[in-house]
Structures are given as C-alpha cells and as structure tokens.
Length: 380
Image 1 (spheres, rainbow, N blue to C red):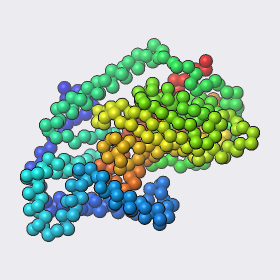
Image 2 (image 1 turned 90 degrees about the vertical axis):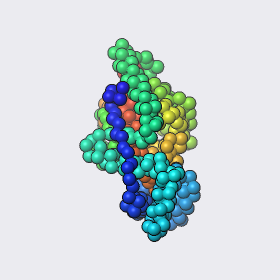
Image 3 (image 1 turned 90 degrees about the horizontal axis):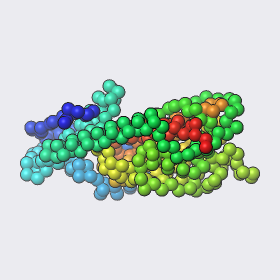
Image 4 (image 1 turned 30 degrees about the vertical axis):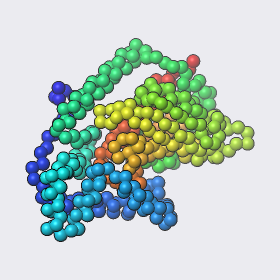
C-alpha cells in the first residue's frame, strides 16, 4: 500500500545524542530566529513607531505562555545551555531516559525538517512533511492514503463532469457589459500595487474588466457559490458586507456625489470551514479583506487570514493579495500573491508553514481562475 501514491516514508532511529552539541544547536537556532524577527520588521509593520514596537515585545512575552509542547521543551534546552555542562548534561540524560524520550526525539526530527524544505525548494519540489512516531505511523499513512484516493476519485469525477458539461448555477459573473468592448491604454505592471513575497498565480482571463470587478466585489455570491462551495468544498460560509459603500463598490460607475477614491480602505469579514486534508483536520478560517486599490485600470484586494485550529495556528497569519487590471476588449489579467507573517517570531516549523501556505493559497487562486473561466461564457 505504501508504494502507491506521491509520498515516501523516511524511518529514523535516534541512537545517541551529544547533548553539548544539541544544546548549542538549539540555543543558536532560537537566537537566530529572535534576531531575524527583531531586525527584519514585517512588511506590514515596517513603519510602526516605538510604542507599537513595545506592545509587540509585550505580545511576545504574553504568547510565550501559549507555546506548544515542543516549543516549551526547546526553550528549556536553550536555558540549560547557559548552565555548566556538568549540570545541564546529567539533567538532559535524566529527563531523556526516564520522562521525555519520545518528545525529545520528535523535537530532534522536527528541528531539521527545514533542511528538507530547503533542499526541496532548490529542486523545485513542493511537499508537506509530517513527523510521526513509529507506533502511529501505520494509522497515519493509511489515513493519508485514503485521503489521497478520495482526492483522486473526486478529481476523476470532476473530469467526467467537465467532459459531459458540469452543472452551472447560472450567470454568476453577470451579463457582458458594453463598456468592456472598448479599447483601453494598458498600464505597465510597475504601476500596480506591490505583490507579497510569493506570486503563486498569474493568468490572463477572457472576461471583461468591469464585468469581473462587479462579480468579485459587488457581493459575495461568486466567491460563495462558485469558489467556496463548488470548487473548494468549504462549508459553514459567512460573508459579511463591506463596512462602507456596500452596493456601490464594484458598480460600473459610482453614484452621483460619491468619489470612488473613498472606496479604498473598505473592509469585509469572511469565515468558512475548510475540509480535512491528509495532514490537517477540518478547521475554521477567519479572513478580513481590505480594498487597497480601485480605479478604471485596476483593483486590488488584500486579505489577512488566520486558522487558529491548525497546528501552530496561533503563531502565524497569511497575507494574500489579488490584483486584476484591465487589458482591453473582453480581457483582464489577475496576479495573486501570498506571504506568511509570524507576529511573535518564527517557530521551529516556520519553513513547513510557509511551504504549506504557498501550496494551499496557490491551489485556492488556481481554483478561482478555473471558476472564472467556467462562468466566462455563461450570460443567462
């Protein structure tokens, strides 16, 4: 069974630990992460003043009481590093042999998963890694195998539906608009809002700019039905209205007396239940969107998403952005990007989180593009 599927098993036995080397390694890694966090401000907080920075340091202290078991163990080992080896080494041996052997072994393996991701990124390989104890490995792999087979079944089913003509809900993108048939002067991409760290999807779409802008911004129907429900199988979906100018944002022309520049800064909240995957159980996502650009040439939406129920979910948030700009008659281009933020410093599994985030967000925006193409020719 294990030889079928896009995965492999790497079995590791921790035979002996050089505690002096390990304590030095743990201390160095924690110091590096704290230095990176303190010296390289996030793109979202680059202009914060000293008062905000001070609150951020307090937030770090408060969050230290909500660390995971492995993070607590890592911090204790970093403290032991500062003791004389005649004290720290016997303490480590005592706790390892009688109390914390499995936990320390898991810490050893988890702390080096970043090397696997670094190797994979160099080879252009994107993957997820799960560290599992031997006694849980069989159950975990069988569960992962079942999930992969279910994904394969659903993928084949969707291909069959596409070949036969899948169910269409109706004209979710709305009617074709006369204004989208006009020639426009295409602006250079340098004039668009800056993307986040990783551009995960970029595509030209055979849909008029004003038609797509209206479908994506006027209300949440397209996201709710075409993307969340049909393409991504999300449930328990709640999409709130824009906090300002609801009903006006997205329209072809603003109402008399309304300045479109005032739309910028409008926000809305969304939440949904994401289905179980091979590595993560079903979990709620909480999203806040902000309109950061809006004019006749392009619009851009920035989102901050949190998944507090996933492992380490309270230590990070995902910043995503999609920008759509006008390319003339019945055409536009969409650029989507993502960046991870760790408000209180990166945990030991930061690279794993970033990798999973790029894969997940990239898949979501790919589904968005496919959904737009699916409804591009549906006008009635």
